[in-house]
Length: 136
Image (cartoon, rainbow, N blue to C red; front, side):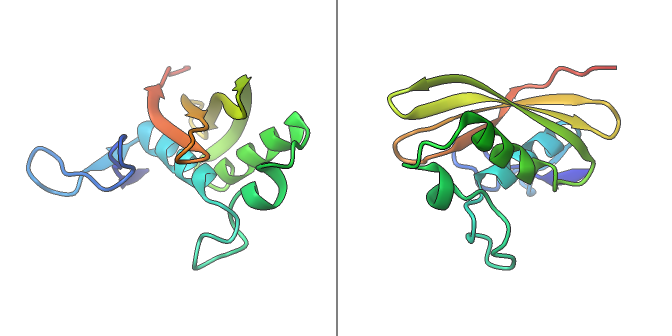
């Protein structure tokens, strides 16, 4: 599986050393695609408005149960090809900012970890560049 590599700071396309559009391979590609899927707000994806996390409708400013939030964050990751499991671990909740990790397992048994945290400018910023321990 390959995907277009996104710059970690801007979440935009980036170039490789030859000046071409950069691409990523497994396991990074899967982790980045899960991170991207989890960042989509419900209704934001113009070609399929049924996809996305209901941040405005059911999460932000609503104080839902933690298990509900975890389920909503895991669900988009399971739509990514080759992903068989996404576990959500919440590591902090300070000043209305939630932080944690998504632990992703693909169909080869490889595990990737994606960290996320809430920022004032971007309610959910997910960084696919944390660490990728390989489990064999």
